[in-house]
Length: 322
Image 1 (cartoon, rainbow, N blue to C red):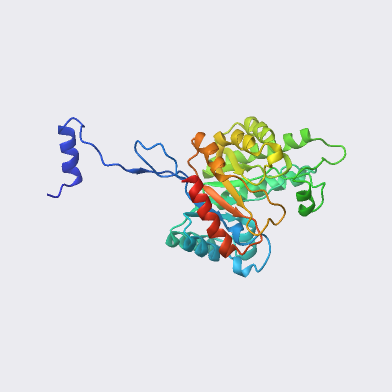
Image 2: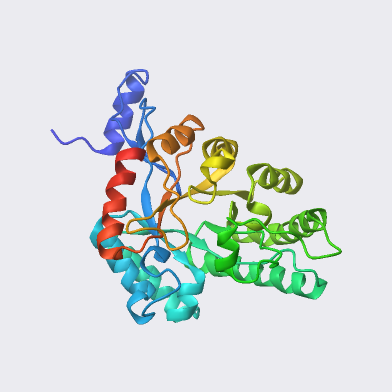
């Protein structure tokens, strides 16, 4: 006998609510699906478009459209957009944004994140103000794409010169003469605070990454996080940006309760700047113990062909985070 919803509810009410409801999957943005009464966590796995590009090679072949197609074909659940890649290979006008949303929908992918770049502590005030306004526009862009969070960073002092040189020193640098890290902390906190109203207005969470500069240490990130003290600020925890000699897993554990995105680095074929592979089973335990149910976003950063290394990375992450 076919029972409609109205009849079912009436019968359930008559029986005093004792009817056992079917097990259903619960989900929210960025949250892993789970069944009622099931405490196991199985994080959704996505990939950054960065995995297919690395700021080099043929930009045409690494268009966001191609990345969406590849990610879907390989079996990912979502995709994180690297903003500079989008700007280099496409556009940010409404027609292009709507095209990406449509492509992601038909590919069965969530647009769960966008990685942005900013410098919150250049010495000149007018440059800091420019970066703040730029970040506000990035928040609005994420809103237009339907993306609920963006990766932000503190920026760097720039005293190492090139990024390649900064990587030789594993992200460590000294402030310019006449300035201290205290100046930098004050400017970063001020800059993020000025972006929070826009984040709240757009419903886009700012995810501060352990990404060099004053994001180099978990204790520095926590200082910024506590000073801003807003539900619209969380962390992007990158597994490759803390090093073993600096207590990588201890620092990740510090960030875990406030993390809104994990970026998982792999290095097949050798790293572009260094090899810093993580034990992903250990990483998964740290974040599952903190009840993290959000996205794990692959950032493949090796020299192997992405068409080989990216799906191989997906297998590793699925095994660890399922």
